[in-house]
Length: 84
Image 1 (cartoon, rainbow, N blue to C red):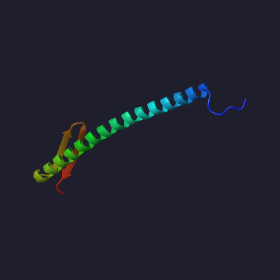
Image 2: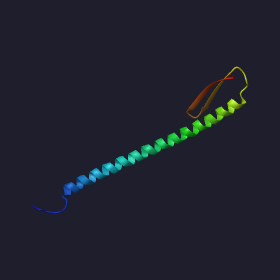
Image 3: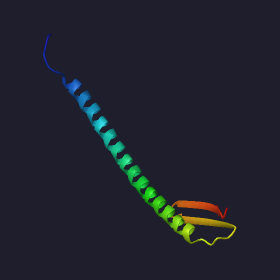
Image 4: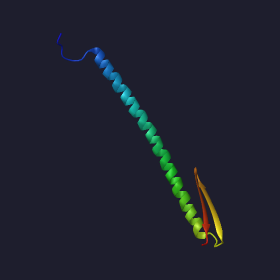
């Protein structure tokens, strides 16, 4: 029996492997896009917190020691600034 082509079982197995692969790839794409969104928001919050801290550094009194705490979203920055 020397037949050319694939049997039905081989085609079904190949289709199953293809469907599992596409499903896994789609899930990975969904998870990675979620992480990109979270990272983008965190980066924006970090930039805003740093900008706010820079403003506070500029207008802080010239006392011996100044403690600055800024919180934007889930980002919290603390700084201790000395006059020296």
